[in-house]
Image (cartoon, rainbow, N blue to C red; front, side, top):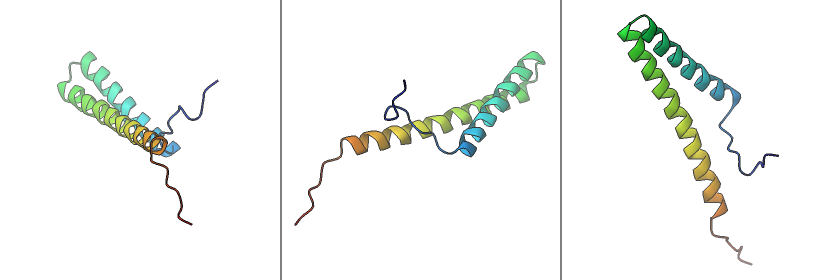
Length: 80
């Protein structure tokens, strides 16, 4: 019951997989760094999580900008 006009497409499958891998790598790094008190791995994991978040945010902003600019664009009448 999802409406295609509401959903944003977040790029190709390769882009989605890359973002997923970056986020998972970051989450694993944060978890490992917390459990083993390894500060370097913890900070590196945070960097990867933030990078993944920023990539997702960029894709959503592009999608929203594209969606609303096409909906509210002024209609141009072709000249005869």
